[in-house]
Image (cartoon, rainbow, N blue to C red; front, top):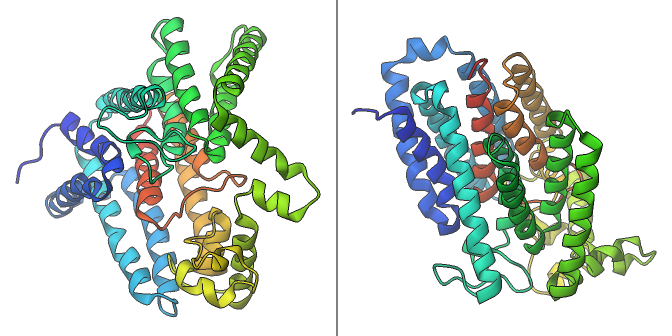
Length: 399
């Protein structure tokens, strides 16, 4: 078994998110990387053990694995919880392959590929907005712009928001007009995606970039950006009824009516109430990782809106609530321990540009004021793994 060049391995790595719109196909490059990881673990264990990146990867993975594994013993859906735990091994093995076979000199190649993919998704989504279908014939989600992810998923906005800091760093040496136009188009698509969590993640990234990277004429740039933002939002308000609708729905959060607030939060109040009921009954290790949907009917209130629709909520729609609900206090302690160890490692192996980009992406995924996807489900766990591994790979001095 021969492992190809560093750039080939990076290309496999990026193909994991390239294939996210095509469901289970994304598992193929993950499988290949996992096989490389097994090969490297057998053949180069001595080299691996000496790598500081391997230590932090092992700590973070062990944390994720054990929080799931411990919760599985009395899970409402034991088969699912144990399956999620075992399936997470692929992240660890694929991570080992990346540590062994990616040359730090090729980190810029990683940034270029992510940038090209992000711009491709952006242009594809804009085509969908004006034509009705994207370049492979996929229609958008009703009331949202979702590009290549198609009409049944609202995933484009959060993924573009995660990729935005990588794009901003990758394009920092290009002309200002190219940078402005590229970032502006990505911002437009994130806004048109209608995913408010993606809006918050995007604003966080822009603010972080301004504080960290803009050193000269900071206030002039902020003024220009504010003017452009004002014009952009005004134009979207006039020409996009869907954008108007999302803003009007969001403004209902300021109402004193509980029903209006629940409307603004897309019926999440009942989900959070049910989640709290589960936490009260299972505070130590939760109802089981990814078992939320199975436990839901037993803890939902009589007038629960999701039960009234003959359905259940799939997850808690907030990562802290999800960790507490699914894995309990044990899980939350483990998560904070893993994040502490990861960012402590980054602090001592920090690259001003490369570490910053993936760090901001990862922080935005864990912002406590957003409602995103389940960290135990395939899509979001792959996203977190990708940007987390990107952070570990790029956090090498002189990378």
